[in-house]
Each structure stands twice: as C-alpha cells, then as structure tokens.
Length: 110
Image 1 (tube, rainbow, N blue to C red):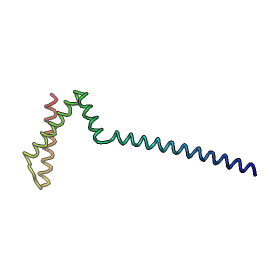
Image 2 (image 1 turned 180 degrees about the horizontal axis):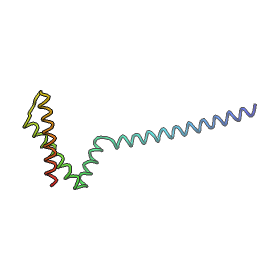
Image 3 (image 1 turned 180 degrees about the vertical axis):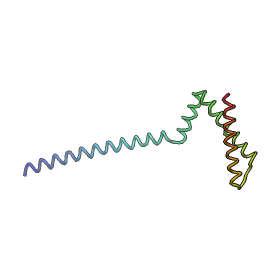
Image 4 (image 1 turned 60 degrees about the horizontal axis):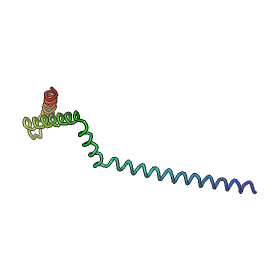
C-alpha cells in the first residue's frame, strides 16, 4: 500500500511540474503573439517602409520610376480607349497600357 502512495505522490508532483511548465510556455507564447501583433500593425509597417525609402536613395528612384511608368500607362489607356463596355476595347486598352508602361519604364532608366 505504501508503494502506491509514493507512486501517487510522485505522479501528482510530476503533473504539477508539467502544469507549471505549460503555464510558463503559454505566457511566453502570449507575449510573443503580442510582440508579433505590434510589429505587424499597418502603421508600424508603413513607418518601416518610409524609413527604408529614406535610407536607400536608389530605392527612391526606383519607386518614382515605377509610379511614373504605371501612371503613364494608365493615362494612355484612358486617353486612347476611355471608358468602354466592349470587351475588345478593354483588351486593347490593357494592351496599350502594358506597352506604354514598358516604353516609359525603358526610357526613364536611360
């Protein structure tokens, strides 16, 4: 009977140790989740992106080139095709937009 009592006490002690370990791990996991949540907030991501742009002058130029070429393609589509419900005109407009974007992108880099 004594043997069962010691085994039961030993088992209870191990269960308590595992429960304590589980509480610690749960607390650590919650803390890490909170840190991750704070880092992935849109305002934090935007601030990091702006700081990266400030620190990298080459990145500034690339972003400006991309914006100009995309805007040029978009406006060329709007000027040539306009708003249309025709599938063929829309496809033609997207083709013109793609070509204009490529041409403007190549000319800006040179």
